Length: 373
Image (cartoon, rainbow, N blue to C red; front, side, top):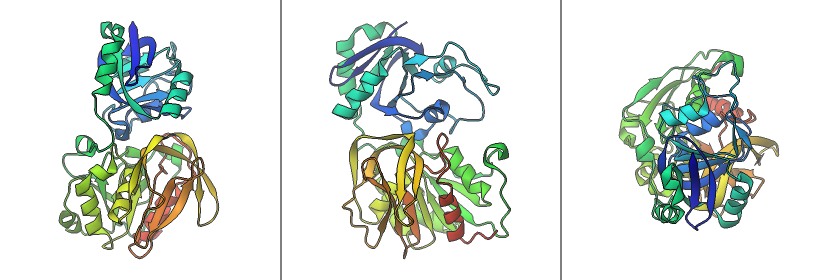
């Protein structure tokens, strides 16, 4: 079936369609992970983004019931070099093409992804359109559609992905993947703001004996304080952090009341609440192999990243300090404010997919909220 990816600058990449038919638009980005495409597809942080995988062969393990990071597929489109015609995995419950079709997501295979990634690296991320079916032939129209689609800068996308009502999270990780954890004598209560939260983050918290209450992104600080939390967690999510003004105001009001831990968008919102600034990156960091330096001990972590915005290195954090740097470009990868008992990282210590080098950050949060083994 005829398919095409058309960028807003007019560059056309033809291919073979799979998944749903039709047209979809979003910001074209690339992910350098070797595995974990189902976790990537279901990560709410990818809302309104067309994801290109740099690994050439995708789909060989199919899809399963255990790996989704949410109930939905959030990507706006999926682009691969080669879609595997064979599925082989003991956990497999279906193929990738059928999975995308059921979730109404357009996929394009047979794309020269190396050329596409080089173009993004040189020109920067941009808006794009993917088409599967007869619409793919009119590439001029697709370029116009792409140019008229949403721009990530200034876009508040959290409203579209956050949970509608508060809920308690109790599920833990499968012990065969992460091992067993000792129970805590005290089980602190964590209120987790859902800006687009991943399930494995929640599992990392419950694995360590924490009680977790997930609340919508717009929940007022007074309501959170009424729950008497021992700690507050700020989740990952999509879009421009500076556009989520209500979240910045809420976090600012909560700082100092109990320990705060933020990941990805939560890290950026914490920085903004402290008085810092964020900026749009040229093509962002997305993948499971990014090197991060811990400035406190000099150790290097290989970490999973997924972000197109970053905290400005010149930010005035009003007593806060930078704790981690991404070694690929020296962008801010972590911060801490000791007096306010708040810390955050730009990357994803919960991985899924990715390495487990940064699990210690969850242990630090447990210690901060008074958890005792």
